[in-house]
Image (cartoon, rainbow, N blue to C red; front, side):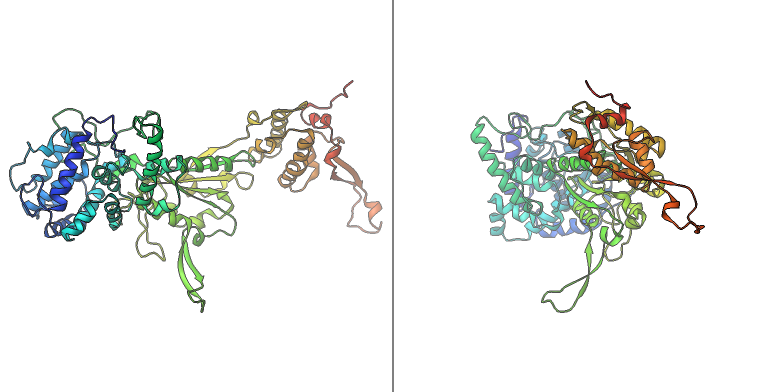
Length: 613
């Protein structure tokens, strides 16, 4: 069962405390730390909703300092209730060490203490507060939102009859469906934490939607339904676990071998809190804890806007697809779009569109969301999930026109906290057609490709250039496989051709290695030259085949690749015509590639090849 947790020796104590809390507070509505009846009731939750949930504080200071201000008009029982809500929010995770959890609970309690702080409570021991696993950096960074969700959820539960509460709390799937129904819980990690700590035999010890998605995809059971229903994914993961436990009866944990789906290489990052001693420092106005500080979110979710640029055939789109697959396997979400000359702001963000109404009578005009807005909304709803928008051929559209005001919002310094409201930190703009301001969250990356043969980086809008990182993807002759076809050295052929193109035009108009990948016959090389390389050179040189010949062959002399004949005005025009002139001109025709020999192709980079004996 998923309660198997070999790395946390106090797991059983945590589960016992959670079970006692579920019965004492959620079912019977009595206090946990404040040992009196009638603590977890609707009237007290109404006060927390009005003074905390509906009154977010976006000012300076950390979460705990601001919380004191939000609770200043609450009565002592309401303050004790908030301390107990905070206790259950922090119980499943080990992001805060036990001393830190205890000191923060005491800090909340003392905002208006109903009695001396019960430091010796069995629910405040190091064993109980040691946690079951990590919630990831985001759990504490978005702590204010997790607590707001907890208040909303438990307020809803407290307003139900005792029989209803018993039905919800007595069945794992009833509990999960109820918790999923709370609107403010969309994307909240507390859903996963509570489900596991209350029902450890049914729900995985995985406190992140992206990590559960990664497990589901790795084991081949992920479906589109899992995007919109976390209980559906949890049911599917339970079936996976049953199969794994049949093969590994010693115990299954996704963070450990032999399954190890979620094992990652060691990483170094700054955690929200790092403390392991038994005496946590007191909270002050300069508290070091980073929960809910916007600047901490910026450091944790450093967004990436990147453009992969280079000549055609260098593998830019291949790299895009590789990254897209990696996002999928890592539990993330993505969308893929291709820009073109007709692509507009309304296609990208959203705009008014005529649609056929139900019944088919007349035409209705409605706002239709574009891919960028769709992904923004998903990223806001799932803060712990990475989201990536992939844009192929970004320079084929009028980029400044397509992005519009988004040019401001995509800048890393203007990004907003995922799931936050418009009065919180970051850049927000009013968008026609939307009923509330739009902000681009930190967990949305943009990765694009750009063909420099169509448009150079220097010609891109300066504002766009400043907001993206630019990574050149150059031709890589050494990556061509197979490298030799007969006596043809394909890397050398490509290098020679690109040196000529860089000399005659510039480095943006080179040829990528992808054209020659997987070619295994001499005729295959000839066909690539005839069907792909020469037409590309014709485009580069505006159909000037004399220069195409020079770039391909390196000579103005006759070769096997082109037929040449002279166009003489005296033979084409009446001698009396003064407009024709008297100079002859050459005309060129590309010859049949089936006539090109291995020696002909080798001569493109090695000069004239003597016939073999």
